[in-house]
Image 1: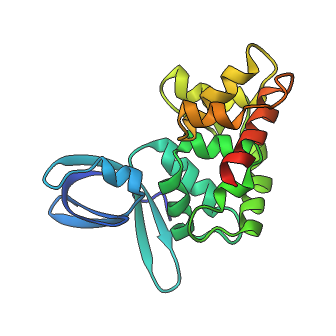
Image 2: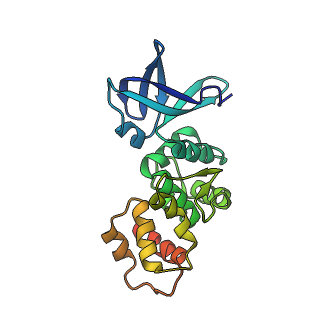
Image 3: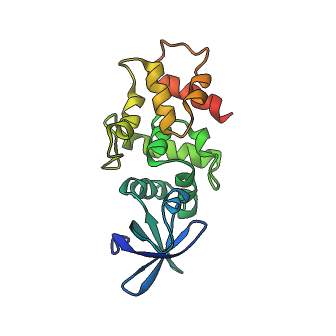
Length: 209
């Protein structure tokens, strides 16, 4: 049933934290959304959102996202036992789809616990259940993240093994939202013979502590 409404295009008539109302065909659709998608919306402006209809016994909620990547991330998150839509929105408000994919691929569950509603056990479950759904080409749940080589490559760099591992690790950490300075500092004193993936894991542990 969640594929009944694939997307909505209309005028933004109201916003509030994690909610946007899109008026289309004279009907106002309340879409739960992430802070990142919300930041790109303006009241009175036209917008298009990719949607997911979440059905429960006592309610139906519509979720809207500014990109297919964000929608794919959301669907994968709620497929994990114990992760509800609210917690999934929290994760995707803190991390971009590329950042989330990189976090899972590098096995960094601790970073996920920064998001509201995600405890240590749930974070570990997310990494365990979703890690195999990321591959070095950037495929995540059947979708390719990012339209640019830069964003799509963020996940691919996790595999490491070629080129300058330290530079690749800094670039990948930047995709997670850290500044190059923060990434470089986290890599200080780390063995540069490690693979890109190993460098990312070490840096994320430092940055999450």
